Image (cartoon, rainbow, N blue to C red; front, side, top):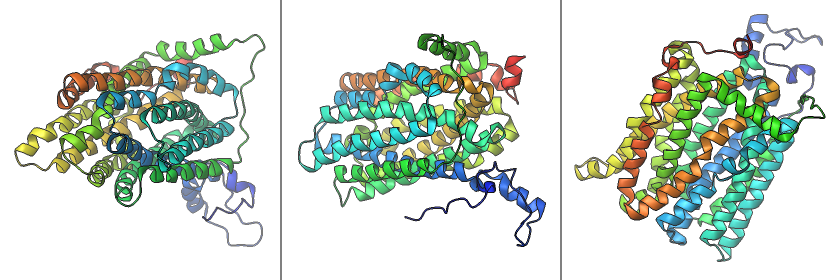
Length: 455
């Protein structure tokens, strides 16, 4: 694997708009307007580039695991609906369990080091699945245990990651940075499941998980190449962990617009987890898709997310940040409804794959545009010293219901059936729309910044 060469001058680590345009060693100077255009892009920001590459590798590995583990549980370990619900709950249990504590800790910690350790821990946890699976000792309880460890590491990674970007690229480049990271995630979602489904034709699921182990380790390597002096806020000696956690929560619930965004995101995540718990069973057992077909559907549907990431900045500028958040929330409800509609439409002659792909594409487009707008708003609104606690408080609230959603999906799937449970999830997702659609967000073009909040 090739690596970027080490920087040869200070310009390599300069922010995108501050690179010198004159060549002191006699080389031909670059015209100021050309140099400025080139350096405006974060693609030329060395430190962001290392984070970007590391994130891309981690996202690809995560998507491979996203199809490998459920298929392994359903096809090899013969997991029931309830067991899949428990596994889904385990994947996010750390967010309500330790999320607020992690936010306070991350504000005190070196974020680059936190990202590296989280990647290594996730690689080690998945390595246990690989060894157990290849030696015939795999089990659903083992997968649940590994999912809990992965969940804990992911809390640290996600909170540190979102809190690291503003200081790394500067407030003026937050939207571009988030859009690039969302684009990376969307490409990984588009490529990963399809690639994973094809690979599952020739390798076992544990062997495919082994690929993810490597991607997490290489991700840690690239993040380790970042050369950025992080300024940690001073901590007063009389500050308590409880008080610091309370400050983060108070900031989130004290901002009216942010409070509405959190409500919408939390409700949609709750009912999205109901669908997530049953999606593999629905596709493989109810709709009759094969593993490769499921992977292809997920990959094709994820193209909507790629388009959303590429257009998010333009959509936000054209429509307005607040309106974009509201409209995106409205758009994902009919898209989610196409998942349970795939069964009756197939009886009318409409291909199952086509219905699922359209639904996934529209949903991922709306979700990515929504996320770029609302995450950028949060980062601009929050003081730097509170970023970790703010992000952790948001994750605690919006991801806190996901374990419950997974368990609810498993229980309802067992007693009501898979398809009726998916319709319950669609109805619940519709309840997520009013907090933002029936709010000032739907009328606002520009959202408040940190300076506005302080005034």
